[in-house]
Length: 168
Image (cartoon, rainbow, N blue to C red; front, side):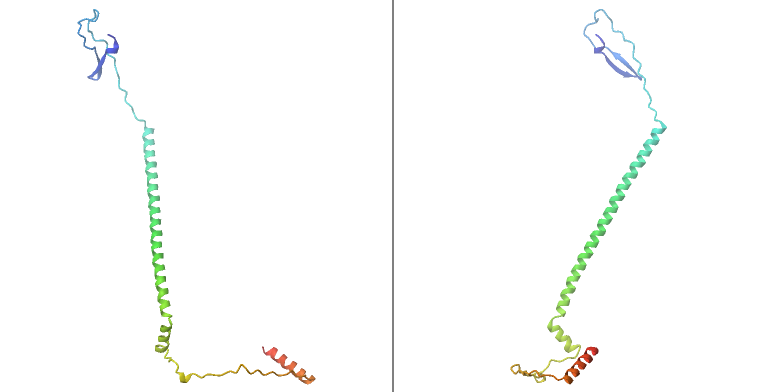
């Protein structure tokens, strides 16, 4: 048989060829003789000094990028926390404003103003005896007829209007 039916095995650093087992003693008159063993050499892959430097440089750059991403995420979270704290403070201030407005409205009621006037300012309610009513007659209308003014009266009225004008 040919090389297609061959099997190789590894022993002592070399590959050896083994023929497949066949029930017949001869293969057409040939005997089993080992063929020449192929030599396989192992190449050692030496890293160049430049490639080590490149790997270190890429690693440092990757670590720097990772650090900058982590730092930016931390800064973003810090700003979000500050915004949240400020929103909470705003909510508390608005609630305090509502409370103070309702307290102010309750203090400005007529009853509270009356109590303040009586107790703090010492004011008293008026009695009906202190009230004086004035009657005004609107039905009576007095008409004064226009009179013809003389020259002296006109000069006097003009002088009086000038004095009133300058006095304000």
